[in-house]
Length: 64
Image 1 (cartoon, rainbow, N blue to C red):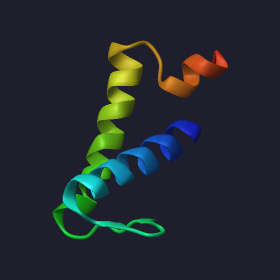
Image 2 (tube, one colour):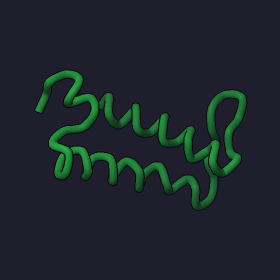
Image 3 (cartoon, helix red, strand yellow):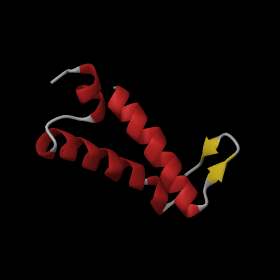
């Protein structure tokens, strides 16, 4: 759950900043950029589990 929250908000804000869709409260993605966080989440978990041997929070908490 911590991984999902982290990658959603950090990735969402980064995508919002790159596409100019940030607000004073964070980000508001619309259109095609709104789909990018979901692709980023899938890539994060795939790379974390299959390639790197654990996601960021799995490594921090020592969970596998």
